[in-house]
Length: 608
Ligand code: AGP
Image (cartoon, rainbow, N blue to C red):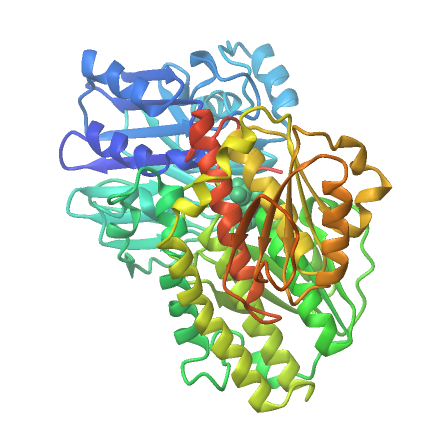
């Protein structure tokens, strides 16, 4: 949700800024821009659309200088046009911003009355004007910047430069921002991926921190203005992980990484195949079971949580509530004591999930919080009592694939662990389930070694007006996820439905042009799902059956069947995810959409 970069370098930093924006294009790609300090003035280039347009512009009219900022945008206020692209600036101050300035209307009015002239429809443009006003009032640049921040309401990560001072300014409140350094200079960025090739050390800024840097000095202040300690950490290795390799798209690469990700997770948490241990969440081991669990997430992560509810409730016999974060945080939730709060997030920065976590902590600080997250340095990880890291590696494709199955697998291990804590599962049964999870890695590998079987699905979508995904039990959230994947990258309308609920309405959609994807697995109410399948068939739908049952055992007369290896109660959804991901990928390719950067979306949704 917008990527920002700032650099103060030894040499010309134009190409570093561009390269960093390229690594963060997944955060937003409707326009981009950079601003570099020249000898006397600030020089800016902006272009609508993808970063390549900015690159072409800079080829024609390059910029030179060693202090600059850059931005890749996902529009919140104002349509994607050059005038709304960042950086925004006055004559002498330029900023890039990720987040939302909630009091921008009031600021705009008072700044306009004082002579500011706005060129864009954005909330962000109020920042340089406010800063300019404060700078004129105060001789002390630190006080001017701090006063500016104190008047902003909402969420922000900001990088800024001035025409007359060789300093890179930065601030973080509610949106992610890190500081990094390397031989080429000092940087601020939304994501470590942006500076992975140029920086060796990093500081993840805390909420409310702000400061400035030049090549010799770095000053970080806390929200109240006090000086903060400067503690550099080594930059994590990530360059190879962010390259596409031989794959046509990041999404395809990430689908194919899943067997490796499964083994990494299993070897981290259950290396002896008998005992499960989460080293960063000691309370799971030490505390008694809670009387209730609440799980909160958005999008694909929410779907993973929904599947886990079936696993947890079956063995723990305690209520497990699952909610989308944007609903949870505004519905005055009743929480109570003795409740564990679990968030799930690939990025760990999704605004609604993060705010739901903060709300929960504020309301019941005595309760424990746990996050399943793929980004170890993220805000959710830092703000939770316990962490189950997903070890999926950077996920660049906007449509989540490997992070989703990593969540499912980590949730399966978590459910097994709690079942064993509750004496609801004997050790030999736990070992058996863990073995099934290890086997799922091979099962997925074998499916991925035979991808032509997925090709026969694509033609069924050439004339379709949508698609319906049906499943029961843990396959119902899988149906939701299959539908989400398809709509995200192929722009086809798709619905996921509990198979048993279909005849209460959606059956009216069915005609000979509607592909209906039925998930029928031995573990989850097979007979009932097959009955639903017959109901769909009887109405002329084009059925795609994804199943782990041989046709001779359960004749269905369906033309298009995808057979997957058989899993157990915990591993079956991992295997069934693969055809759903491949289906979405193939339909998107067939339709010629932008698989990795689908329209209107961004990878990390850091605004509510
Ligand atoms: C997944 O394909 C989506 N792009 C989206 O639904 C995503 O899962 C959601 O925005 C939550 O993101 P998070 O896991 O990073 O919190």
